[in-house]
Amino acid sequence: MKLFSLLTGRRSAPLARERLQILLTHERCATGNSGLIPVLREEILAVIAKHVDVAPEKVDVKVQQGDDVAVLEIEVEIPHIAARASMSRERGGRAA
Amino acid sequence: MAEVLVVTSGKGGVGKTTSTAALGAALAQTGQNVCVVDFDVGLRNLDLVMGAERRVVYDLINVANGDVRLQQALIRDKRIDTLYLLAASQTRDKDALSEEGVRRCISELRTRFDWVICDSPAGIERGATLAMRYADLAVVVTNPEVSSVRDSDRIIGLLDSKTLKAAQGERMEKFLLLTRYDKIRAGRGDMLSIDDVLEILSIPLLGIIPESEEVLRASNVGAPVTLSNAASAPARAYMDAARRLKGETISMTIPSDRNNLLTKLFGRRAA
Image (cartoon, rainbow over all chains, first blue to last red):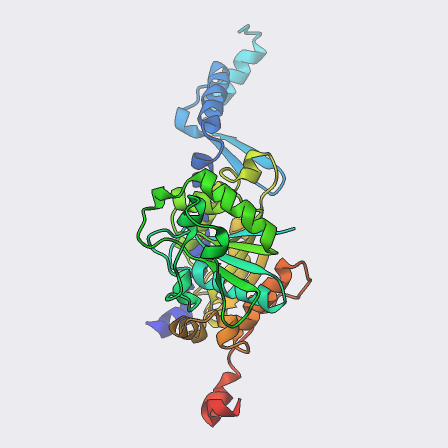
């Protein structure tokens, strides 16, 4: 078994590192900035939903805590068709 | 001006007490006046690791509650005269420790020592937050292992929110002490490397303590590892870490015991 993992180069540390990075990104959001992330998420979702059909779970808001500054990361997944439809409506001079 | 340092980790069994004793002794060995304080009320062990378990009469709670003077509770180390211990209470509950009592006790310790090193209990409850509350800087003890790194991350968050420094809007200085590190296993890719842990926790490195049987031997005999075998790899690593705390610039190396193979073959007395 040991020989097998040696030959295939299956090392466990990279997996540990990856699991920790994913877990801690989420835990830092949950414990720090109490309440800020959910509020931001709701408001961003509301603004986007005015123009594009977007599913609530497709809006991901993260805060990366650095040494001196924190980075706010917002990822919104928009469906292709919905995005295009909204853009063509925009061109048609639709007033909100 | 005294520096109050908290040795903390979140997770238990990673080497907080060992590191408190070793760093305290190492600083005292360089001539600094040091007091190590056990905050683990009900589960004290710093006295045992320091070899002073039979000399404890009064403890931190007695001093914090004003029952006795600080002088009466301080235990002077028999090997280094600039090293003192303030033990935790073994019989009381951790709720017996009041925040105001701890504040008074720490500020009195500040006037008498160069270094006050607070050994935090494991966990994130009252005992741990009281141990870090009045600290100027923190040493976060971490093993290269997923649960320890996760808990250290949580503790770093608490250091940035629950300490007096953080409450006053100041920056809490934090250093990583990586313990039980095995260079060979990390090299094989079967243990998180130093860079992995540093990248995840993103706090500066104070030292790397190699996995070594000398640590257990030191606790068996009741001596900080820097005193029980000063030439051993962990002792040298703690010595370097202590000098970095004093502001000296020392290149980061991982001391090794490997040359001890010769010592083992030809008998320890020769060394």
